[in-house]
Image (tube, rainbow, N blue to C red):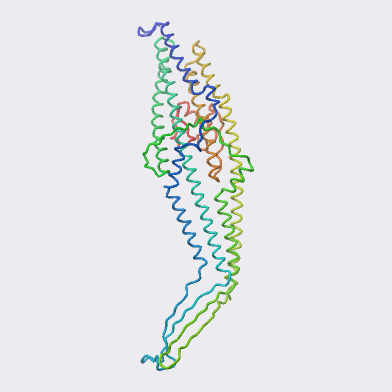
Length: 488
């Protein structure tokens, strides 16, 4: 069957096809050229001016931090209260002979009385109570440090999510350009009788899917910006420009094993709070033992009798008798011993978990570093070379149109996985700075072909993500930096 009259003649169509294939090859190779893939990172989250400004504003505006600071102030105000003497007691009274009339000044046994008494704890109790309260305030101070570290980590992670979302949008732009070129190529080949109509329909379908994913990415970006503005106390819809690129962040350094552990032990708010709790429990144990000793009460008073009767006075010293110490004071000692042991065990648990988390992060970071090296040193360039080779084979009729499109889309998938590797490495550094006790997410396969995203704890499974990247089933909306660009 002869082609329709509207179709182009063969020589002209060949020129047009070659003209369209050249930009496709350029689009495939542009983001993955050897100099850029192997370039030394030129930026860092630590030097990002926008992030530094957001951190400053967050520490000034977050109500969560003001809340724990108020709790710390309340705990400090309890310190002088704990060591203060009990309030003295003032008594004013009258004693009268008979009920008929007031006999003060007429009867010897009738008088006014003014009495004052003061309770005096056994020596050492007040100091111990002050120490207990002071150590309690120290434990609350560790909670303030935890709040600061958590606020900074939350904001850094949210900023990293925004950077990754914008990187994904750039990758989507690159993929859209490839599909536009592919649609034009499919249309020309169909008109010249060299291609199938299904190729043209597939290209048009993928362009519409890209438009759909762009809507989702734009909504995600707005959400990321609103989250950052909330975390820093800004108006929710205030624009937030960024200049840092994820591809330039590189892999951070967390130090050597022993040094990293020592640093975490020194900075951990949970360990600081645990040590304060241990010291407080020990002081409470000493106080419970001291409570076995009796407290004293001193009192004095005067009794004016009026008339010619001389004024009387009295002074008293009282002492409480701990006759129920077997069921009271002794039990308090046993309780404080148990509480001190519990605080010690809890702190040991925190220390063990913290050591584990540091080692986990170091191990995961080492794997991510190797993965990033593989991407930079060969995988990205191999992906581009594969696309170029497939394109060459397609020119001579030895490869299908679907193979060309799959190879070109694979370039974008590989770069997204590479960027996700860098993001996960930055997340490990954020967790280390936060001295987090949260477990490290399991690393993915590190292969775009398998659909894995290195270090993405919340990423879909490999088959699900691979289907999403290939433009198949629609996935769930991305929720973090580890979410994939569905359908890319």
